[in-house]
Length: 120
Image (cartoon, rainbow, N blue to C red):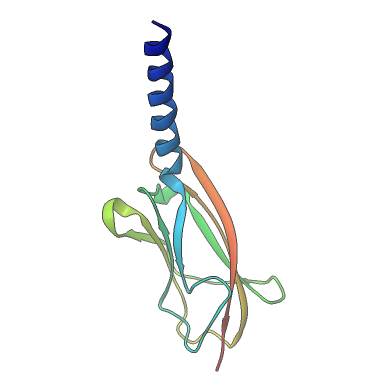
């Protein structure tokens, strides 16, 4: 009986661990700590599961910490797992920081920050 209970607990913990990763970031565009020649059309944050667009945010800051205007965020990719924020294609060269926070559709949240540089 103890072995059955142990097995059930183990399977439950595996299920919870896989569900907890629903809002983990897998990739970003531009890549973290990278230099890009031209500003991308969108910031892109790719997650392991669908994102709740209404409860997710991303802010773009310049080197002085001033917020840079962006377009309205939207989702793409499998099941809405890519959170995109349109950028001004005429962004000035310089260092930028992205502060983001997302809520997955199952209610879990994740947040982070990364930097990139736009060169002339």
